[in-house]
Image 1 (cartoon, rainbow over the protein chains, first blue to last red):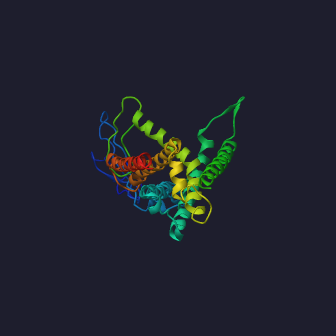
Image 2 (cartoon, rainbow over the protein chains, first blue to last red):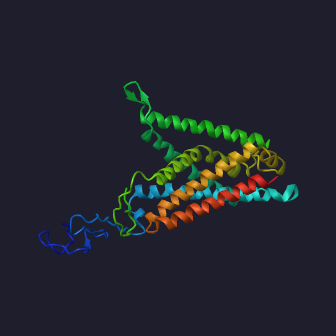
Image 3 (cartoon, helix red, strand yellow):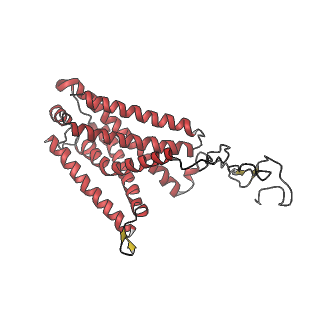
Length: 162
Length: 132
């Protein structure tokens, strides 16, 4: 019984009657008779639930990384569209504002890489004799691969422009 | 598998016959896109967005080098993968986050987010494969 409820456990509850179980507006409904399909427990969260804890905030920031990455890709699409104007009309994106936006997007992209590759050690199980490769080692290998791939792609991009 | 969610909508448990393969494919697509994106996206933003405008040579700073790179079909395909991963990640994460912020319509949010993602990918494909 919730401390906020006004009746005790001995009192019957009417069919379909909502019951407040917590101050944060969590409500629940139970089927009155057996045999009826079970009813889900709707949990109404306030819009700002993600500001309550640091972990929630970091979770939301992780989800937001996709927005930053896609925003930068849209800028790249603009650059792709500009090349259709020919050699005389082509003007690559630049300037302090573009660099500043790119720095923010880079930080978000790196946060995505860090959080997602860190998970690799949790969901990858690599057998090694009667044990498995430690999760921390897998995550480090993923970060090593990220460094190698980044250097390789950066080299190709620079070589293509030289 | 049930239809309940955390958005406040009053849903009933509806037993699903067998596994939800469509949702499994969507999740598998997200895992793939997120891993590929985690590896290849930072290098592009670093070189093309930060170091390129600051003077480091980059293939997209001049028309000649950009057009020459885009004339290679493998480069076009690679860039299409880059766009696909980025837009798919956006669609998937928006699909979940918007519902976690209280919007109850799973199907509606999914259609909008994945639809916009598909539009972005189509535009990228058009620009890549019909350009110089």
